[in-house]
Image 1 (cartoon, rainbow, N blue to C red):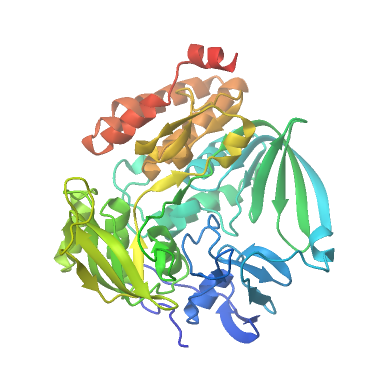
Image 2: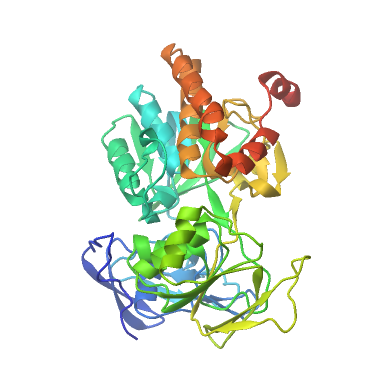
Length: 486
């Protein structure tokens, strides 16, 4: 079937681990340590990984971060395994699920779970820019911190960002995203006060005062975590878009493609069409070119490009057309995408008949926005507000990032979709608020300095005004929050 791994790249030197092999539906597949199962399969040419619950629609990779159901498979007899975040190992037996799986008759591997109680000062859920930055500060002051992430790598979405960050060098301006992740993870791994628990899914908060989490492994651990403070920095997931055949394998979230090509060094396709001209769409189009993928165009439903001019200019210099006032109307293909059709839209943003344009592509990337991963905070009973301009349901919080639940904080894209710089800053604000409550006098001065920078310098930029206005709608005073708590 061929090998779709990227050998030469202008930015990244892919250092692959030891070669391993596993079986997929009875076929032997070679991969490398450090890859996910899905990345290894994709590199070997596989594109179908599951079916719809009814078993009649094929499913390909979409999010690549364990948030959708498109790759749920049976691994060593365990159903519903998210193979996009399951590390490949020698000797694995991986099988495609058709529809909803049966409960395994031999459930010994499922029930053989060791229970462990953890008492920490701060539990941080999410190891991206917000969670990692908060952990770095809190651990530096001597607090016991547990950082939980369900991926087998820490760093969040930074690990797949190859572009250089803009802005203040304090927040890594001029540094590529994956280099920032390496630096943050390295700092945390050297701090004895910080534990990074990978492959750990925090599934609920219980009235007895602990969080339940599963740390997947051999054997798995059932963690009961008691923490004085909690920072929920669980990030966001990509949205899909309604159009005919929008579930064909080869239709993927833009971030999913970034994961394949920038984190694992695997080409997500040969010929691509990108839907959405925000910063994500523009950046991923350029990264596709760097990976050797032909980009046939970018379709944007609005009349103006949504992202920054500097990103759009790079794309245009490479001859990639940007079709403003266009949307995708359908995809065509058998077991994968073979063609995509876009159309002009009228003032009502509906397709105009007779204006269709066809593209022979095997990859359609959706860069149409993100949705905060709010489920845990919602289960905890945090007060939320629906803001479409910020991604969806957003938790109410004070300017110090504390939610309606006392000593539970929020930071990063979960607090409203914005740039990574804001995630760093919000992680810092939450951390310094916790330090203030722990009696560190210097924390107040540091927090107020950062707050002043966030609201009076960084958010004065015209490019973040929409985000600023959205954040103001979910930021309440300390007095109002006390009233809301009852």
